Length: 276
Ligand SMILES: NC(=O)c1ccc[n+]([C@@H]2O[C@H](COP(=O)([O-])OP(=O)(O)OC[C@H]3O[C@@H](n4cnc5c(N)ncnc54)[C@H](OP(=O)(O)O)[C@@H]3O)[C@@H](O)[C@H]2O)c1
Image 1 (cartoon, helix red, strand yellow):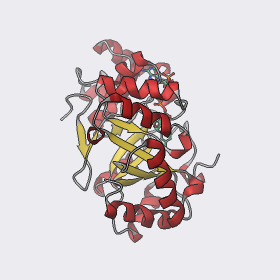
Image 2 (cartoon, protein in one colour):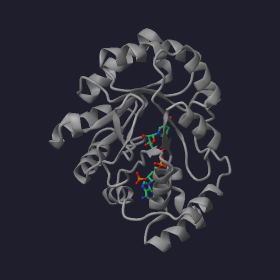
Image 3 (cartoon, rainbow, N blue to C red):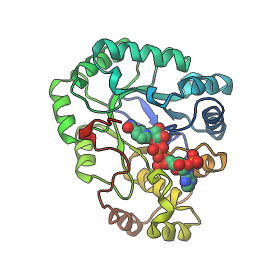
């Protein structure tokens, strides 16, 4: 049920993940990320997304420790970077993330990009899951063919696929594939990297409801049953992005947004593995 910022989706193993969380890509280590996480936790956010690539795990750990919110109430996810993939390297990367975050477990550990060695990486995630060090495991940026190959060798299926998803990039077949296989979809770049105001339809729908185009974009994902992690380092926007539980998009508005899909990526092609 979509009620408030702690409303959760249930992963295949029964673990509950808040449907809206705070993204932190490009939230700078130190004051910026600490301020964002502190604000978010104060506002009731309980899901925080990071990655070893982001270089901000220590700040996130400090903000969580100082927040007074029990660790058990926070759903914390991180990811290993591409050069940390492989069985042993992933176990090492996981330990490093735990140390930086100041925690002894993660709620979700994610493969950041599909790579040649992802099957070895996945065996490490299955070990972490079996040991209880990761309450759930998943992938990012996996298309159908990546998931197909992984499911063929996995003992534990990924519980989440976190991929680029917004009105200009919807990939309905990928979402249907995930639904069929019990994989929860989590949208990154839900705000089109801050460009939602460039979409007149989102602005117009927002005006009908007294909401911003960012709030319409987030609400649309929630009504699709998709989880999402909008990023901001500004308190007013962190609050705005959570204020999406007091209006409902009509079927007509949902259809208008569905028609905006133009296959436009702001991020890399998953088949290129997120090389930078
Ligand atoms: N798995 C992956 O490969 C992957 C890749 C990319 C991202 N992610 C995750 O997904 C999260 C979200 O994606 P993202 O950060 O790339 O993009 P995003 O959330 O779509 O957009 C973030 C941008 O929107 C701005 N913004 C925030 N709230 C706004 C609002 N209410 N109105 C207008 N602009 C607003 C932010 O600026 P300010 O901060 O200045 O407010 C920032 O420039 C990331 O932070 C990260 O945690 C995962």
